[in-house]
Amino acid sequence: MNSKYIKIMEDIKLRLAGGSLNAGSKLPSVRQLSEYFSCSKNTVIKAYDELEKEHLIYSVPKSGYYVVNDYQKEAEENGVIDFLSAGPDKNVMPYVEFQHCMNQAIDHYKEELFTYSDQQGLYPLRVQLVKYLQNLQVFTQPERLVVVSGSQQALHLLVSMPFPNGKNNILIEQPTYFGFIESINLHQATTFGIELSMEGIDLDRLEYIFRNNDIKFFYIIPRFHNPLGHSYTNGEKKKIVELAEKYDVYIVEDDILGDLDPNPKSDPLFSFDPSGRVIYIKSLSKIFLPGLRIGTVVLPALMMNNFLRYKFSSDFNSSALSQGALEIYLKSGMFNSHLKKVKEVYRTKMQILQDACELLLPANTSFSKPNSGFYLSISLPEHVKAKQVVHMLNEQHIYVDDASRMFLAEYKKENLVRLCISQVNESQIKLGVERLAHCIALLDSRKKHSTPNNFLLI
Image 1 (tube, rainbow, N blue to C red):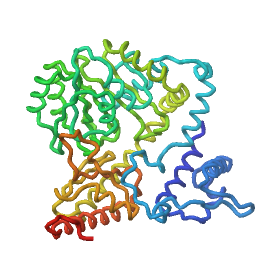
Image 2 (tube, one colour):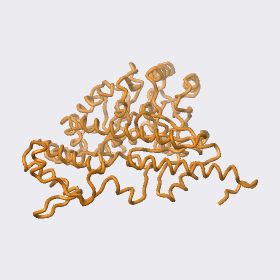
Image 3 (cartoon, helix red, strand yellow):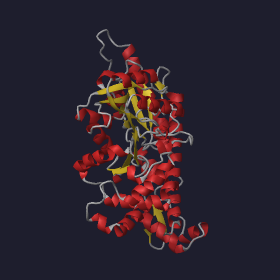
């Protein structure tokens, strides 16, 4: 596969995103680019043709190629600053590369596309996933993997199915991923909470809950937690696994953002698990293409048959075409190149966000300080409600998330705002935080000067 034209495309996209190429700008001639990249003119023409298909450039006969869109300014001109959306950055998604993999998958997996494929997932994909997981310090075998239709499906099934320990209740961090809270609510599962801050959880409290509350499993997001951005230390992870072993509790580890960890010595809970106590869930939705709906779960052998039975009742098997294309993409090595790029993008955005929060937020707020990932949370003054902030900012086309939906009722906090950096432009981050800070200060001032009847001054 000729990858030189892909390199040319990526270079042009980076220039568009960085603002050095604006709407209407004329691009270098085919001859100039072929000399610059030391490639044939046909390679440059192919790159330009693909960019035209993506509606990023257009050609003028006998004149050359021109830019259609101005990536960096498009959202700004629409007046939108998006700290709400949690999908991956659209500007770094490998659409063209993956299109090739889809086409190859159609040729290679013809039979599987028109039959019900392996319920556990395509075996060649499971082999590639095992190799991929090794980079995350998860060492397992294809026989212990199940391909699922996104991590949410795995979580939903685990809530409903019985576990080998015969226990019934679930423990979750507070706050936690709202999709999991939806699953436990739908299943009416008895659920306990344990408070999480950027300093972690109280391990003595964790042991008390394990010992006294018939816990089936503990659902935990150990790296770049949603919504706090918190990450556990290796020592804390090891202790949690030891307590789970001592009290016969399973751990469901949601490591959806583990790929973004800049610390090569940070390990998942799974790596401290000698007995099959940790169920490891991994999805590519946040760093790759969420529309694929492909994730994987690593299960202890004694849970495999039961899990497959529950999955069969849900959807028979996950998309064979998506699985085949992902297998080809992983095997080609293109994923590693993509991952290196997105790690730097998100790390840079998070640093810009933290610097802006440090500089601009009022002194009576506090915020979490993750070193990467998607999420940063801000604790507002106690009497300022997150829903007020969300409403006021919405009117300015600035979107943030009220994190109150991420708590169980008895733990609910109404003054926590979550910011997600994945789809906001770098150039908009500081402006967004500046307006957020002004909003907090205004609401804080209104509350302090409210009438005895506690009406807000308008």
